[in-house]
Length: 154
Ligand code: HEC
Image (cartoon, rainbow, N blue to C red; front, side):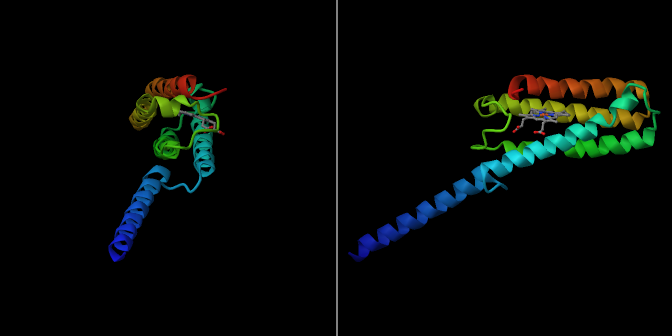
């Protein structure tokens, strides 16, 4: 009897440990899938708004202030890193297509491509050369679109 109780206790403890470890890694910082969806939509919304602020400069509808543009690209580089932790396992939903979870390596590659393009935009801003900023800005826009075409519902 005693031995059975011991085995049961040990088994229960192990199971709890396993469950604890699983939920910690799968859920990461978000208690509920809805929280992850809200977080990534917010992060992408801020990214979109801040990225759009450079559009008038790139279209030469606003003066090119190299220092201001560089401040903005530094911010964008940070923002570009935020959304991805909120696409973890079990967080299907929002406007994200299920392909995000079916073709995860492809999705992650698209996220990396965008961040690489954003880092190049930051480099271009540091050069102080508007022509370089324009080209790099266009490349970032393409990298956003490439992912949306494959992984976002309209
Ligand atoms: C790796 C894929 C990927 C990349 C790269 C990407 N997006 Fe998205 N984006 C998504 C997905 C998926 C959604 C839908 C998220 C959801 O609803 O859960 C989305 C949603 C959005 C939204 C709507 C947010 C809202 O209000 O719900 C905006 C705005 C946006 N993205 C802007 C951008 C911009 C700007 C870039 C490039 C600088 C970019 N995205 C790069 C995948 C991507």
